[in-house]
Image (cartoon, rainbow, N blue to C red; front, side, top):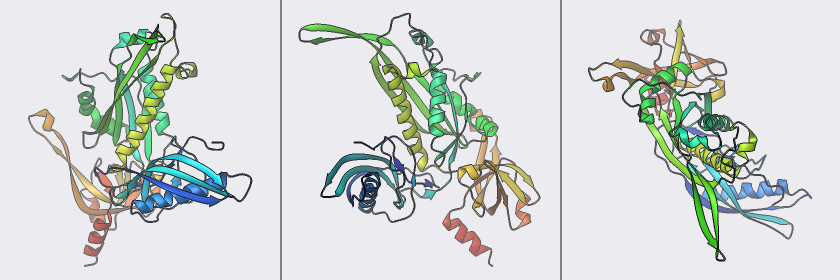
Length: 404
């Protein structure tokens, strides 16, 4: 369909509490009158009407939307407003008749009633990715494919700054000295809090390339055998809440494609020549699906900012304007207390909510300064204590308490 590009609609909202909310697919139809030779505006209006139909089916009401590139459909200036999150959208059909354009869509929707709304972009550290069987990279000389995968994940995630704030990508491997050298997930969990502290992030995304082996497949067509040289690509990704030291999402991606190149052929994995091959394309498809899955996995996860400095009756936290923080936003203090035990696995901080509210008074790109109305609240606040967006119930309770 001419004039339609691959992109998508995502509604600008995040969520404040950890909740296993699930999206659901809905279908909707919309129409609009064609008012000029360029039907793109009319198409956008028809899609807007279809999306309204979808959100009504889901039982949602009107709130706000933002158009964000994602990979399905592009409608540049839609003004739909809804309190549901459109995770993905597909144009099923388009028909023009009697001066009208009619469209049918499918939309993958999160009602905010399922997942409480939060507006802050999650801070993310990407990498490293580990090539599990280095010998398999000998074919094509693609020894740095693990680094290339980490970099491409990072830059694709950076295209969605309203949802996620990818701050760093690590391509070199981490040297581990513990007993979990054969379990990458446990390795990263062991150092998760150190990474979070060093790079000012809450979430870590890392993974492994499990399989890049090749094989020969013979098929029979019209009594003629055809042998094809093929190659596997399989990767695992892990998404970790580094503050709480837990894995919140894990998934395996596996596919294969033809590998029609000579055994001595070598590629530069940082060149577009490689990524335009069939094998590069299936890697790209896995990466793009991983980006969508990470976005979905983080939708309902909480934001926890870290206090990185304090002075007078002010504190500095490690998220700011880039994350959607605004002057006047209020955060609740979460005190961090270190627990020691002879068993090393039980050592580490525990987090205790406190009835202390702090208000944002000044902003930088990735920092914010907050103040409390009662200077006495500052006495026991420590560097590395946490802050979380104050919910409506917390604001109501603490505001009411302060009036007495």
